[in-house]
Length: 229
Image (cartoon, rainbow, N blue to C red):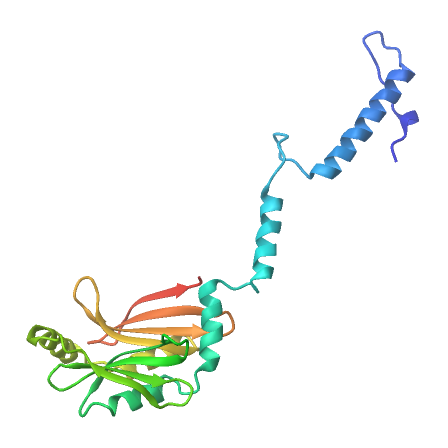
């Protein structure tokens, strides 16, 4: 409570003025109320908007469950997978005699069903696409792209020849660093032409995705990237 009787205003004459003292008290009280209503200001006297922004961000996060769109998609997709990477890879490879897995990714098909979309290379370099139903482990679709020419097949064979580290070995390397669920493996090349096994691991406590690029010749981890979006 503001006490007008404890403060006096002193002018150049040196005499206290009671009326002015009371008026000053009223002004101070009004200023205090205004300050309480508008929030704290910074050292320059300008009101800070960071509190409002933080409140809006918190409300937005609360409305979305604290997850981004990609994280929500992972949270809905991974629990629906009853097959797992290892089993799906084995099922897909058995569709191609002497085949080698070059890609496998957990995703939803055009009907929204969870599938492992895999690519298996035959001995001559021909790639076959095999979809494995993630719910029951059955082959949902199998097709060979008819547009593959000799150059395409040669590129696949060259990449396979350089890959001394299998997809499974790369998965073991990645999950040895980050405990989680494997959602994608791909035999690929970097921009400088290095053959890699790229592995995605999702941690289900926060639904973040960690990508490991493993040198397919040496087994060394070339890159680690955590996707928190």
